[in-house]
Image 1 (cartoon, rainbow, N blue to C red):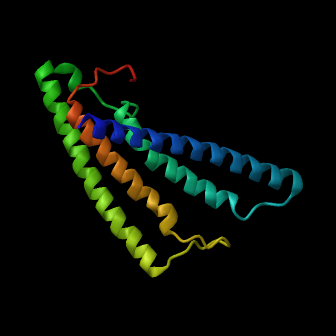
Image 2 (cartoon, rainbow, N blue to C red):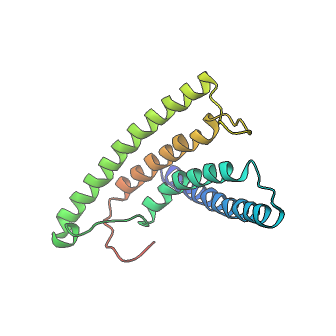
Length: 165
């Protein structure tokens, strides 16, 4: 069981690494677009669209890592004013609700991507990218988010706030 746990944690970290690479690619594409447009008066037909897809991908692939490392925004007014037993109950409750949301999100994202694939929807730009490709980031990110919340429930620990793992 520990091996499966470690593999799932590794998947989440790989999602974070890919998210970081996508942000780096977005930076490079945006820089190239600015230089091309400003200095050579030759705007690209692809940089903006691909940058948008890369940002979307980085958000969804990196969200599970944010959950695992407590790097997301939290409101801990209630949690800081209850005893340790109640903090544990609230941690299980919020992680369970996060898992339910993630499951619903993943199912509906998958259904949307399948419909997009079956209809053959492409982007309106000159690139004509099949839209199921960038939309797949939603499904992959949703699965990673489900895994992250399952691991949080297994851990059962309460984040004390103020620090990152």
